[in-house]
Length: 185
Image 1 (cartoon, rainbow, N blue to C red):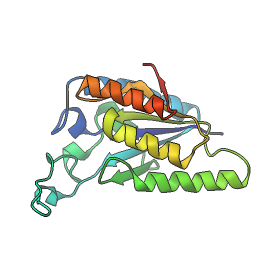
Image 2 (image 1 turned 180 degrees about the vertical axis):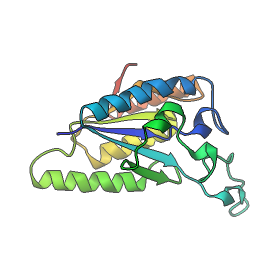
Image 3 (image 1 turned 90 degrees about the horizontal axis):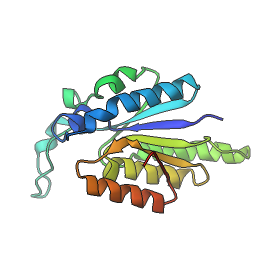
Image 4 (image 1 turned 30 degrees about the horizontal axis):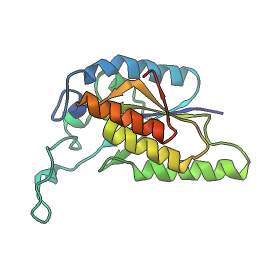
């Protein structure tokens, strides 16, 4: 049975672009190494992309939208560094307009359904790495837990972070409270 690695939003805008923060670049080598480990073992790797359109600056109902970031077709949208170089054309990419990926959830539910029919689990484990720990990593870990309730869900604390270290630690606490295994803490 294969493991699944989900690389969450390790995009230029979250590392050194519009919403980048000090230290995020340090994850590049660690995440790239983990991608290699999974591929070498014959496991599955997929990626999520925070995805916004060029009209992102427009307002809706008088509300000003957040800082423009991860606008499709820009350099900020692309995966950062070594991690970006690891992306293969055959990899599954989930583009999402907000924190959690509906398409990822639907795919995991589908895999869970098939596995249940044959009396097995869809994956040995599901591991998440990437940015930002207290937003998109947390959201997609909850999605994985919801879709695949009996599969061990793992977040590698050494391969995720947030701009605010206190929020990062709180996110790791919440993950553990949701019975998600946090390793390398």
